[in-house]
Image 1 (tube, rainbow, N blue to C red):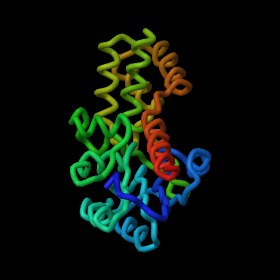
Image 2: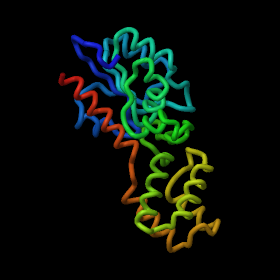
Image 3: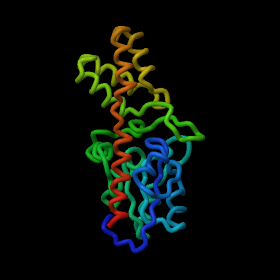
Image 4: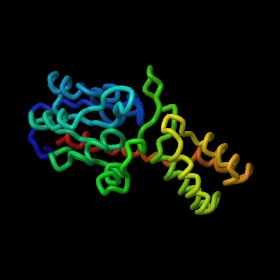
Length: 224
């Protein structure tokens, strides 16, 4: 559906967790709704939106957007683009039906480097949609970056990644991971302190980067 000719372009983006609406609007002038859940895309199409970007979505607290809803929207003529979080998951499953996937996380799911939904899931503030835990995709890449900087050894990095993966998605944080690693004698207190500081100020925010790529892709379509 990515090559459908849209006469009157009206864009809607589902976001708010991986990137705030205020920050997103600095990149793309469009309508922004909260993270997508079941029934939202049908509502969007009924209101005339024909370019739909899915960045963030509801995972476990309410029913997630269904595959058939997205397919139905595309069959009606809408362009649907996804990346970053829920958008990456659905795009990796529906690109064969015409959904456009954008970004590293989409590619990882498409190529089966990642499989679990919890890789991108986070706990959020119900009022602002802001993340209050850290996504596994960011944690993994940030720990790899710390290893590359020689803050932790490669085997310590692997142990920390496994520790984070065993932690429920809603409780993942750099502080919690480093604290638990000290308890398990995976790393020393001194290394934990240095690592936490690195993670706090040098996080590899894959989700935000992919969200920006989705917005840039839609902006390009809007300007055609």
